[in-house]
Image (cartoon, rainbow, N blue to C red; front, side, top):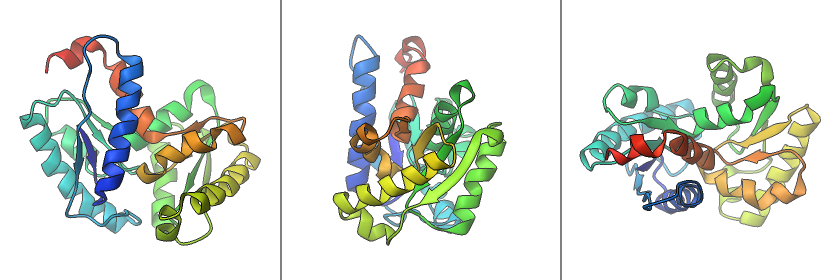
Length: 224
């Protein structure tokens, strides 16, 4: 079950499709189906810590429901992983966050990594630094770069979004990033669109979480 903590059902469907592609490629045998759930109580874009707190309550409710529906794992599909830790204490199935998964993948092998995002909230950006430290990779984190332009406008125009992201990605590489996370569920597909323009890996957080599901192993997942 992929839970989108924000209220954008279109983004939920896109992220569920991205996760499904990973599972179809990485897991042989019977198909593991990804179902998407949207937190209808939250705004369509989570742009501040206050938004994240609002989203967490919906994630908890949807996560408990997912276990009742016999899901074998849960992906929390917002970059700050709202409600993830609390949900782990309420359900018996694995709970993975796209942010936590992307940080782990970006830092593999001691790589230095950066984050590119469209949300300029100062407290939210500071939370990325705190998260890197919490996960033990603070020394590898090169910082975040924010796109120019209104976030809502960029999300409504793929060409404008990709141009703005490309500029921020180049800035992150100049800072020494050897891998770059596209920080946000709605940005996940941009990693694939822009990868050919850059020599360093651009990481899709949704795909990173889906790969983490695969690493759980068929035996653990087949119990459900």
